[in-house]
Image (tube, rainbow, N blue to C red; front, top):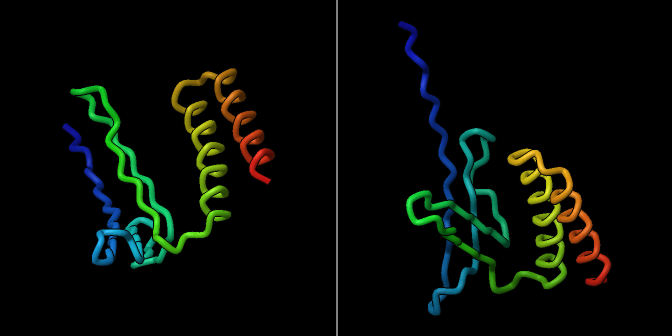
Length: 110
């Protein structure tokens, strides 16, 4: 019997909060990418609760995040969701709709 090798990786998010619990600094560490405490201004993390069939969200952005950066973050997130959706479901039609929405979002934000 061949035993499967289990590979584990960690992604760590460090958040520095002000006295009002507003993020001032966010850092992420990835063993896989060999990145240690890389600063970022925006971090959204979503996980799926299979049992309850609900989304758990952790939406963080630093109080000094520029509006333009937030708009660009959303645009790139929408594009990524379309690609991920296509890969996960093979639904080309819906992924094209998501891509079209992304481009309209960017166009309307300029």
